[in-house]
Image (tube, rainbow, N blue to C red; front, top):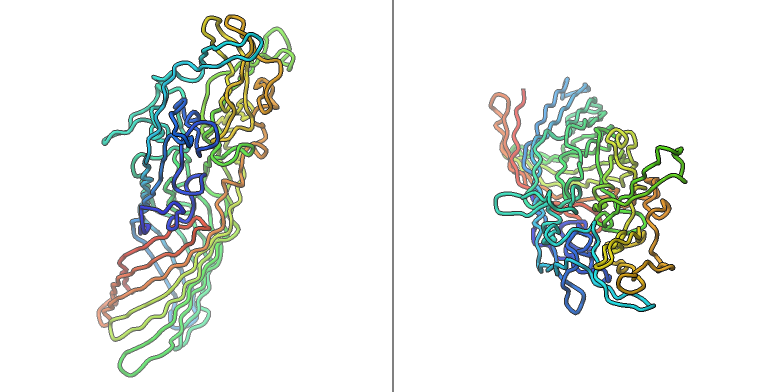
Length: 515
């Protein structure tokens, strides 16, 4: 199976859902004025040179999605001519390949400033230059948006690491090459009985269960290949029936087949990771820069708030901190398929349609796994936007300010706070601009309560429904032992732009033996 096109219209008509928070598969890059979808400073590029519209670059995703594999079925029945018990076992074996095909349609050019310039406010204002020691110098900044999202520079043969980069993504990256997972997918088993059996057809009903033998998400990459139900168990019911509609004296027959199933999906394999945006900061905020604040207690005093010394530490993208293990549950997943089959002697031709759907997912943070994995306390981190917690001012030395910007977004934030005074006597203002806070106060950092801090609802998979048209042409050796059969199958899946289903076409071969 493969998606129809790898050259998407910006509205992603064939992809189903939007890979970027821009609402398309294209995103603009700029600075912090809100004219572009992404502030390059947040990825560790520093400032970038923009045009008159505030745009420095344009990036694009054109994902290519493929499934390759086989579906193995064992079907045991007590008596197919009358009432009886049957057992069915299904094991999909295959690979899922996703190539994000990330491109920089217009490359953003960093200005490589080593220091930043600012005009101080009255009294006796003057132009000063300063550095933010926690923000890397140009040699250790990301050189491009691609390098930032890939997690390193990419050559034709390898992906170079970026351990020398102070600001680097460990989670929610975009792969520079195809990602492949090869698995035995979720094995399913059905146990039921042949309720009705006659010359005109039959009707089966069964209890069905699905076992989580596929892989589970790690959130290391955006567009991660997951083969199976992401580690969930499934329990439910399966129905299957046929009706002999017409025949003549020349071995021609028309049969109608119907198959349906519904499963309730339960939490399964752990840990199962998701990367979350911050609730206060909107879509894409998983890529915002965070400043860590650590608490040091005086050994000579009780560990109370009055004896706490708070020091700011390194910068990190939020995704490295907001990727957490989750518990996933889906109320129902189901499908119904109808097929009409025309047989003429040993040949048969079939045409059918299937509807498949799933209700919206419900997520909760898996606190037990989070504790076992020693996930960091969210309240140790503050969103800084473009604020500076420590100025190193030429001719004066260091000035600690501990500024943060709790409501900054990925595209818009305020410039660093304007200091006051003149050279050698520069100081912090007594009144801060609206929206700028003191990061030493825990109330100005990310809430410790994950339900208050994270946009959990936004990370949930939405409800989905797809339609699939399929056809089959086959041949059966009816007079041979085991009645072997072989068929060619083709299908096309049809989705809209309102759900996260992908438009796929497929081609395959079907074979069977009876004994």
